[in-house]
Image (cartoon, rainbow, N blue to C red; front, side, top):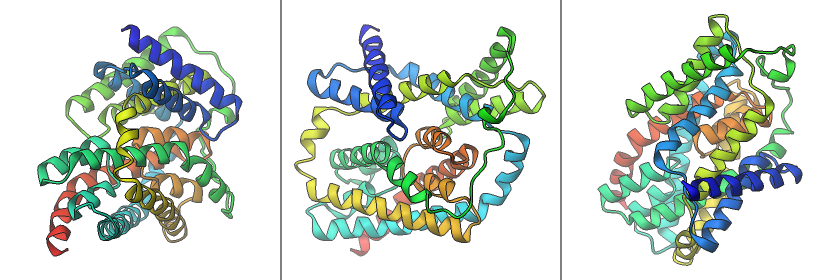
Length: 345
């Protein structure tokens, strides 16, 4: 527990500095960076596993309270854009994996899984199952996470500024009348989020804690009991999320970069290009706002991308839905595709 409290304190300090520097998504980036530095220097950061679902539940509740019935009905319209985004990412990331294998010493399976737009844990487990180098996959996937969280928000914000139409999130709290809420209302929201989050987490659904909490908050909202969370709740959620990301990395990952330096450089440059290509394509042909398309196509975590997207003006509901479907399809299809492609190389 003392190391957890210390990790949270360091993350809070980093998040505060990130906000003061006016970085895009400064809270989560600052928190992640501070905890990562702490881990590199002293290897003592810790966010215990039992706490992690509750942190994801906080993110889900935050997103759910920003949504209205109109937002949910509009999700039907994103299916074509989601299909285009998911299979576009899979195809382009397979090409990147093949390219990394061709110019480096990584074997085809390791290269392909390193470039997969999935989660670190999922792709590392798949690598171990398929006989790839799980350690190198974990290092390169970690590089992907650092790059996406630390650098992509600024790039995507600049890219989104070229969009020709404004995106409006109807449930943006800043656009709602100022109201005061009772302790019972906040308690009801917390209970709804916990029930939904813990239920889906227990069912082992990808990102189930966040998705379930989001659904629980939405049900409460649609039943006429809307609660708008204070602005500081977002900062707290991003601080905890940054602590989780930063605590999963340390000196071992930094030292491991020496072995995969060339693949790592290729990977981050390719990810940026793929994100922009797919994001602009989905926006143009999938009839989706540019900012939302770019964040939905970013190969990051569901909760992290949704929180950052909400802060930078995208539609967090659509980003969360598309990111979730991407994760499910990638985890379901990429192992088989990796095995098939590796046999052909």
